[in-house]
Length: 260
Image (cartoon, one colour):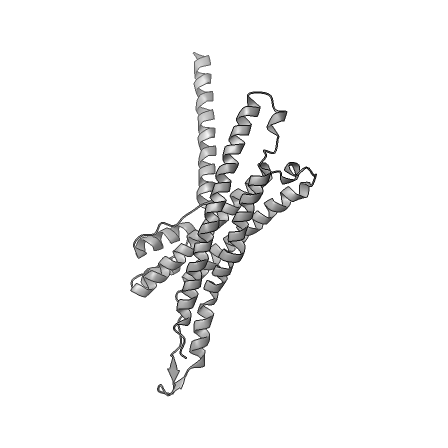
């Protein structure tokens, strides 16, 4: 009887430990790959407040902003920017993991250069940190609200106001930066990752050093994983090109408001 009690106690303890570990991993992945659900402006503000732990004052400010059409459009635009940047962050973190454990380009090209593996992994970590910075930048821009432009003309409409054009040009900088990052940084990085994974895919422990059936299982899982990541990178490369085009269109639309 005591043996059965000890068995069930041990089983319950192991189940609780496994469940706690699964919960922690799920919480970490949820934070690392979060996506703000877009819906009604007020609902979007509530989702933003949950993700970023926004204080009451900022939450109230965002809800007041969501009550008008222009403010709601601004919130939706910044939410898209945050989601896109957070997706980049997760994608490059995944690529860093893949480069570190599933890619050995030096071995495939028959020369020994261990630093090559770490260089690709480190480059992806840097890109993930840059994407994280973009998430925070978009969030700060969201809290700041739409840029308040000064009057187009001064002296009772008789003269143009130079401050207006300067403010319009300043408001376009974030779009120009986003377009550059997507086209000149993220897009090539995805394609380079895909090419490197295609050329150098190999598990950190070569399957031929393992005994059967582990060599077969590891080889198949490794090949499947790297193929999926490679296809994912190609897809994200094309999507980054589309994002760059949209950012450039937004920049051009801002310049249409110049008082020339």
